[in-house]
Length: 139
Image (cartoon, rainbow, N blue to C red; front, side, top):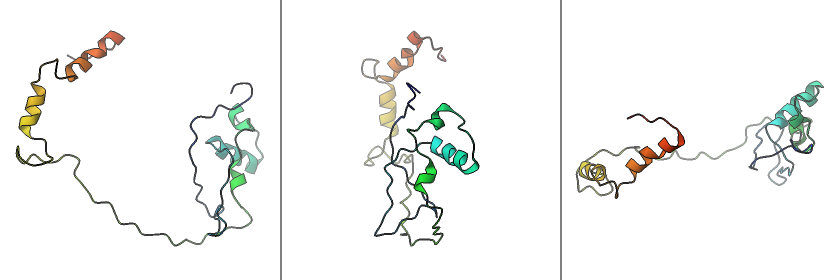
């Protein structure tokens, strides 16, 4: 908090999926209020008549999650949702087939990368870069 204002980090869109938040296709519900993780605390405090636990959830900059919910009209029906196809599974590491297989790293190419001189290979330089910061690296 600075000067009584809650410090908010990155803004990200939030989706509230609940029987209490369903809109109609011709009347979708979009709330332009500011919510964050303490909005849940505000909801609990409001529901049970509790005092704010921290300065952050006491702030008026952050809204109570209850403001995005409609407790008078509950729609618990399961909506029709699309059935997306599963993504194609791929291996994380492709097997070595030969030096001529397109798109595959060959054992020869990997050996060549390891044998480059330090002026051509940046990896040995990275190993020593942490030493000047006081980190003890394994030998």
